[in-house]
Length: 123
Image (cartoon, rainbow, N blue to C red; front, side, top):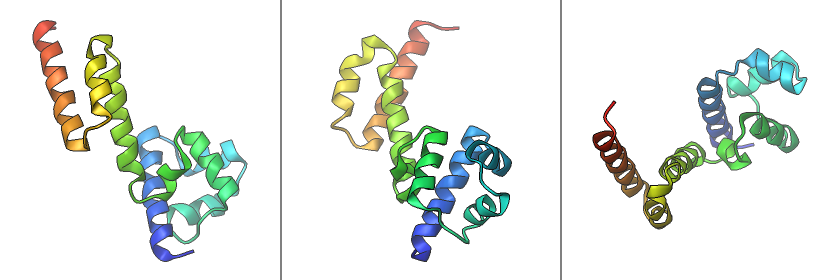
């Protein structure tokens, strides 16, 4: 496995572990894996088999590509921004349009919609 693929996997794994609050021990326990195996992934020394990688993706609730691709985490964040737009049915039109936008436009639309909702319904 090329070093860059292993490094991408390592970075994405660490990001997801941090985001979900899942430790090495949690992964070992939930997937019945030896601690040395999980540690070797987290340190970037080794790369898991594809079947184990799919189990990891399932554990984190993400697509396999989120763990393996350089754009994996960015794609995940873009998906979450689109879902945030979709949460309010009144913003459905924005959600439909956002599928054709780049991530900067989606960020702008999300910020604007949040501002509009805050101004309309101040706490």
